[in-house]
View: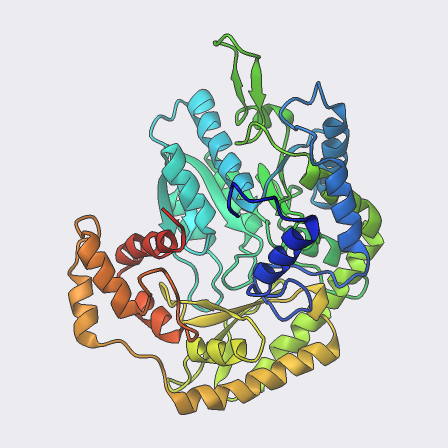
Length: 485
C-alpha cells in the first residue's frame, strides 16, 4: 500500500488476505498430511478465534498484572500432567510450540548439570532420529550433540547405544514418543534407566504424539502404546504440543518437569538494571496470551471424552492406511508405526518417492518428502489427523496413491549428474562464496528469486545427493531469496 494513499477498507484488506491464502496448502479437509492438524469438528475454529481475540492484548510477560494468565496456564498444565503421568509435584510451562519446549528442556538440563554436577562442557545424547530442535538447542546453548544410531529395521534407538554414549559430561538424554520421521516410540523405560544410572536427566519429546497417545490408551479395546511419559522412572521432563493432536491454534505447547525445582533451572531473572525486575519462564519476554486462551478454550470444549474418541478414529484410520499401503505394488511402510505418523518408501528402484509426491500434489494431496539419511531411505511422511480419519477418505487416499505409483514409474526417478555430485562433494561449505552458491542453486533448479519448480523431485534429488553440510549451507540461501532485502 502507498503510504500517501487513503487506507484500504477492512473488506479490501480481508479480500487481499484471502487472495494470498489461496496459494497456500489447505489447512482443512485432511489432504495436507504435514504441518497442519485438523479435528474436523464444526465450530471449534470459531470458538478458538473468539477466545484468542479476547486475550490478544493480554501480555503474558507480567502475570502479576494479568493474573488471568496464571489461571489459564495452571489449568492447561494440570490437564497435561494428569494425562501424561504427572504427580502432585509436577510443574510445567506453556510455550509457543515444540521447538521452544525442546529448547527450554535443553537449557534447563545445561543449567542443572552446571549447578548440581559442575559440568562446564556439556553434551546431549540424541538418537539419530531426534528432532532437529535439539540440535538447534545445542548450537544456541553451547552443548555438544552426541548422536547414536537407531536400529535399521525398527528405527528405534537401542538402549545399550545410549548407555555407551553417556559420560560425566552428559547433561541430557533424549527419547522420542514418537520420532517424527518414522512414527515409532523409542524404548523410553530403558533409555531413562540408562540416564538415571549416571544421574543424568532424561527428556521425552512427545511433542507430536503425546496428546494422541495419552488419550488413545484411555480408549477401550485398543492396545496401549509403549510406556513413554512422566510415570516412567528416570523421565525428568516431557514436551507435548497442543496445536497438534490437541487441535488448538498455533502456537501452543506444554513443557512438563518432574518438579518445580527442576523447572526453575531454566528460568531467567534479572534485576541489575534501572527498569522493572524481569522474570521469564520461557524464551520470550512480551507474549500475547491469545494462544494460551485459545488452547484453554479448545481443551475445555473437546474434553477428555472427545479426545479419546478422536484418538480412536485416528488409530483406526492409521491402521487402515498401513494395511492399504502394504497392498500397493512398489510401496512399503518403514518400521511398525506406534502412533499416527507413517513413512512410506519404495520397494523397487523404478519408483521414486519424490516423483510420487509430485504426482499426489498435482492432484491435491500433500505428502511430505523425506530424503534418505543414515539408513533411512527416501520416503514420504504422512500425518494422519482426525480430519482424514474416515474410512472413505482413507480409501480415497489409497486409491490416489495406488494410481500415482505407475505414473511415477513411467516418468522415471529424478536423477543427478554424477559429475555434479562429485564436484559438490569436494566443496568446502564454509569457503564457498555467492557465485558458487548461485551455481549450486541453479543446478538444483531454484530460481534467482527463490522460486521453486512445480515438480520438486529434481530439486530434492540434488539436495539428497549433496553432503549434509553443503545442503545446510544452501538451504538458508533458498529461504533468503524469498524475502526482500
